[in-house]
Image (tube, rainbow, N blue to C red; front, side, top):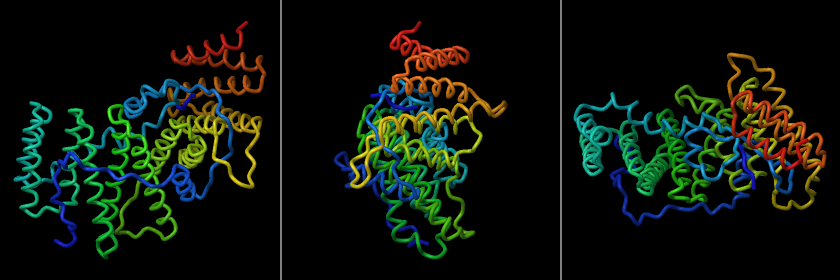
Length: 416
């Protein structure tokens, strides 16, 4: 199956160990995949599109770090995933510890310097953990807010250390505690007057933590894909729900900024790719569509998103819906073809400096997919023409995987 491209304000108490007991259990969502997808679609004021039996589509190799780590063994032919996902993942630890370091009071900074020394300069996990714990103890003694970016950053840095030494389950446990503590604070104090800015900050932190958890659960050494999906769905739902609330009620000056459009787009795309990995294309398609709506209208990545949508539309197999007959195979192929053509047309209009390699590779992939659609229709001459065009485009930009895919397709349809 192919895939795509005041003291009370600090409560509840947060003296939970930064390294939880080994027997800590992680709660599992009780919602089904269909229920999760419905909530997402409801928040987007949309609903799943079309239906279809699976078909063979080829896409370009994903080249971002997050996708490489998470899907390297599975996404042999996946489309380029948004580099915006890095806003949540690859720089996640850096933002929370380095960005906040200059704000530590000297007694805490002293312990943090030791902890970071034994994390990065002279790696010693035991000593590093000792000084992180000492930093948390001193922070508590001098009355630092346990929900400040600085203190949360210490706990997140512990998770970074655990991931660095490949103790992924312990990294997960640390971040699950951070998320749980944050949600308890939100429930008890989030709606109290004067906490508006703090609520926004903590909620944004919790979303980022949940996305990082999704990455860790999907790690090839953990492979808890249901939990990965659950944590990512929660993050996307939270982003959409808060954005919807702000649009409906208006933003109070003291609330502060929410996630940028780029970050929202990235979260939708990240979840869409996760659904694709599970062949739940009927859930991926509306996410890609919403990402297209949010994405800048004349960017190479918008063209890539259009191609992703074309693939998801062509591969949908949603559960039966009473009173709604499934779309026919020709309808689904036509839907996919239309979006692939839109992707090519948009990419063709983009000129330097806005035009990047993503446009060139996206054009090659979309052209190849038009060949796949023609092959499904039984139009072998058109399929051969498109595969030949795709090979030429891929050669021109040095996209070797695209060349190989197109040559394989040409052999399949009998190149003349």
